[in-house]
Length: 154
Image 1 (cartoon, rainbow, N blue to C red):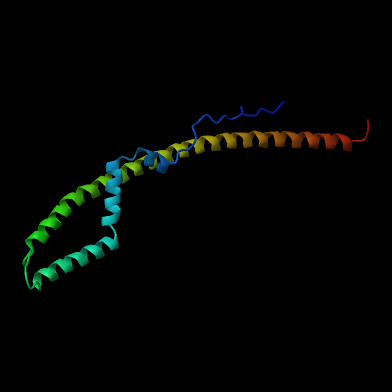
Image 2 (cartoon, rainbow, N blue to C red; image 1 turned 30 degrees about the vertical axis):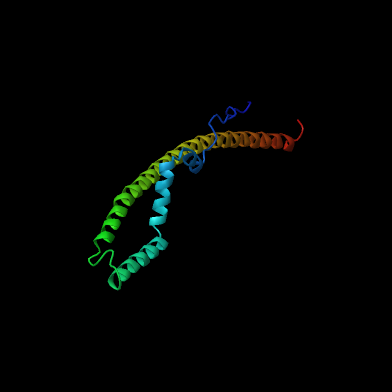
């Protein structure tokens, strides 16, 4: 009896993509700018610099000997901070939306890789099962041959 092995497996799927490279290639100028703003505004460096500037602004206007360009309650400073918040918040949201889209792309890529891996594991297991069957068959034949060699010549 001739053992039956599965047909040779052919890898017919495209190569695995690096999602980070795909996203970087599609990045628009606006997306890049939103990411840079989000990275800068979301740092301790920014908080420190902004705090120092606000403290310096308030101090110079409180102790100014000659001219107060923004006297207490600092209406001009509040206007600048409101403008900054009005532009920064949408940029942060754009960056977060892009990151969420990138996460969805990564999840889809992971799913596709898992499907490919599952298919290849199935093929490997089928092949191992065929090898096990062949080994059992060979073992039986070896046992039969030994039994025939052990019998005295008739």
